[in-house]
Length: 277
Image (tube, rainbow, N blue to C red; front, side, top):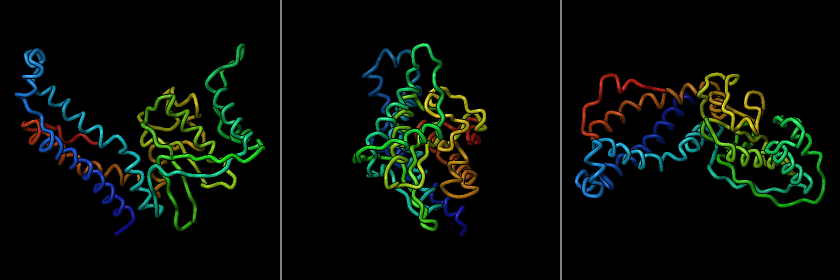
């Protein structure tokens, strides 16, 4: 079995675990009971088809277990591809006091334009160079990263901040602060730290244009930003992204059909099972 085949199986296994938990919840532990819905919300039931609220019932029970799905799948890919990975890893180290002050200064400058001046655009290389020039006393710092991975062959360590493809500004600011702190630690605890998006809704990296993260990173050029295929291929080697897409598409139709038949109690509409990533 090749590494890509092993990764595909591992990704499918993780997704199936999550989906089976959802199906068990909505079918057995917490099913939608029509009579109860009509009793609690008679006005809604009189005006809106039960199926609409049944769909909402499913969605609420789907979102919670899938809330950290990208981190979970990245952990799987990195474990298979690099050798070892974990979520919510606490990385401890020391950062010089002036570096911490400069990190805050960089973030404040990106967030608030100086009076009478144009807003500063993010530039990772120059920002990091400026921060690393800071001296001072060593201050203990702990950074909790979304996913931590170790390349067991090359003996290298990596940290990843993984956000949805259209993240908000506050999330990105926190991630940038973490990444700057990781690069500022002495001795360095990781060989690389990255801000990662699992896929690109705009297609090419050069076309990514969601404005909120662009406040903190040059999303098209900063080397600490990984989007879509470059992120997955970094974790598992060339072809990982294609394996990921194939893995999801192969099992997607099965669960869609189960949801239509077992939960909604209807036959799947024509071509509804063909939609894929």
